Image 1 (cartoon, rainbow, N blue to C red):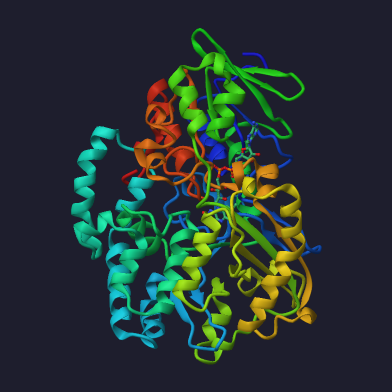
Image 2 (tube, rainbow, N blue to C red):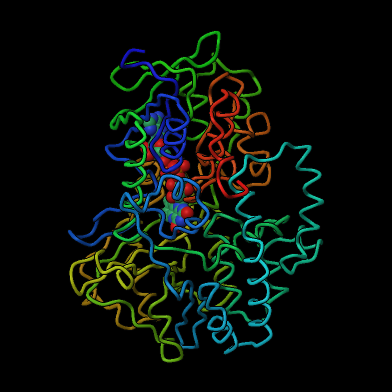
Length: 537
Ligand SMILES: Cc1cc2nc3c(=O)[nH]c(=O)nc-3n(C[C@H](O)[C@H](O)[C@H](O)COP(=O)(O)OP(=O)(O)OC[C@H]3O[C@@H](n4cnc5c(N)ncnc54)[C@H](O)[C@@H]3O)c2cc1C
């Protein structure tokens, strides 16, 4: 083999691409990883956009699947520098009139969650704690689902009736399968303040809160994921670096600043890639972390695709449910909420929702963002990671990062996004002060807003969609990205998807990357490393 000849090439060093590359190399494939940016990580990314020494995670904040993620444990990422903190107060909502906040704690601290919700309703506190406990008792079932390739459509049909049958295990009825998460939340909980928080939590993972057939989304995104969020010490960049180290330790060849411009195809299937500048590399397998449309229409080219694939790629949809703007604030002191007089934990919550006084306000906000409009109420989900990890700002200073749900990038012109970048933070801070009076201009050292258009330009998250494909029902599960490519393999021999356009979608799961490796290993007779592990996946 020459120096440009490999068994496999992975396109894109997002965490999924690095996951696939590390496993392929470990299983015996000589692997090249090409990343178009100057650094690895994709959405696992920390920068200093406001002022030196103030770290902000520009994309992913909460690391919710670390305990389950095979890549993290199989490659001992903690020995390579990754480290997590597990904040006690996980998610909270605060109010402008100083009403009590609601604070949801880790699953091992449900008595504190119960106490917090009980300020409004003991019945809701009982229900939440019961549902959450039941869900955590079957967490391995969720994890197995995540870290296994999706079922075929036929298997899926059988599974759907099984899924309905599963719902009682976490306190739901089979009929809940057909409802939207919002309907389930409204039926289960009478407290408007809790509803507002749960609507928001549901959409954080891109699960549309008003989409019907949402029973499993509610169980997955609201019940399971709430409270299992970890914080990456030193910013998520530390995690990305550990992933890269893992790849290098296995022997993966890394090429940064190497945008793949063409996936080369011959009569036998894929045969390599060409990167910007013209250099070519050969391989019999190409796995790609990039989005479906780019891969099929730009990199492979219509001349190499069937009519069905061309049609599917052209019809693949991005947004609106995974589109965020990131606000970054450098602060002298963290927000001090009016609601803290009831429960000071709200001032030390990992994730705090600010700007919404009711469930109706939250729903209006979501409808506007999903409906191509800039929300007129600039509320956000916020993190002050320095409360837990002081290394993320200079001594006695704080970094606050927040997310706005925004319309898809193409809904506004470049000039309109420039205007948003320059002025939306002012509106946000004015609203913020109603909830935390110390968020005056004297407390703000600097600020920066990063729009969906910026995300598209920087990370190739099309339309700002961090899942590289919407979560409409026809693009989820065994339909993702589309039925003819649902199990990572494509109609072109040797070409696989290993990014969030494939099942199960976005988020720092490393699940598409891991599952794609499993399928490639089966197709090419590589060692089934996962079968030696003491876990069901
Ligand atoms: C604001 C925001 C907040 C988020 N918060 C969270 C969170 O808290 N928790 C969570 O779990 N998830 C979160 N996400 C989602 C998460 O960041 C993404 O779903 C995740 O990064 C997808 O990972 P990936 O590795 O598959 O792809 P990406 O991270 O998108 O990486 C893809 C990589 O491929 C490269 N690439 C693309 N095309 C080419 C090419 N032609 N040649 C070479 N390289 C190429 C890109 O440069 C990029 O590095 C958030 C996303 C955003 C935008």
